[in-house]
Amino acid sequence: MSPEYLLTIFIVCLAPGIGVVYTLSVTLGQGLRGGIWASVGCTLATVLHLVVALAGLAAVLHASAVLFQTVKYAGVAYLLWMAWAVLKGTGGLSVEPAAPQSAARIVWRGIVLNILNPKIPMFFVAFLPQFVTPDDGTLALVELGFGFTLMTFVTFLGYAALAASGREAVLNRPRVMAWMRRAFAASFAALGLRLAMERA
Image (cartoon, rainbow, N blue to C red; front, side):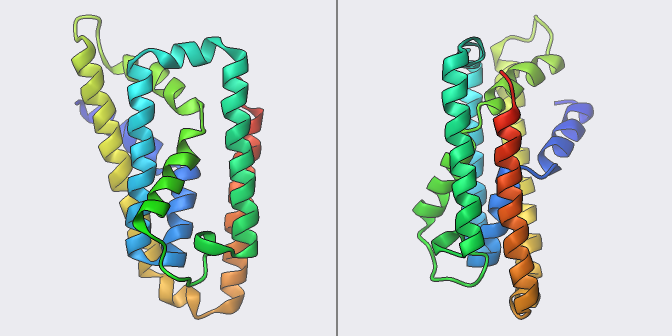
């Protein structure tokens, strides 16, 4: 993998999106352990999207307006539900200290949240071929894709560690917690609205 590719995917992964917001909110509510499992869930979703893209299913998704819209609006609905749950501070989506959630539940939510974004496999289809030549073959695409996946996981872990390091300071300030809850709810809602406006 070229330095240009590594720098590009680092910038892409660093940009706040659904997975970053989910990882940060879980870390504040569950601690570093929760943030690590959230990172695992979001990364597993990326792996699934990569498999879909490499199998050519992303092209089918792109070609089928009905399928694209179905997946997209399922994702929008889930994001809006996440926004409401965070705003109300319910269950494992609370950014306030809560009873520890099982690793399986945190991972599953991370997978569902990211798997319902139909733009991710299309991103792979559009992005990865820019860094290979016709002579490189499928193996080169797989290598680039898993490089992207590894970078995603490391970046999410970095966000989780950052949130965990300031967790106690945030939790001891009720007013800050209230604003954090609103900020995360607004972020999920904004991501949902942005996804709703996406076109295949």
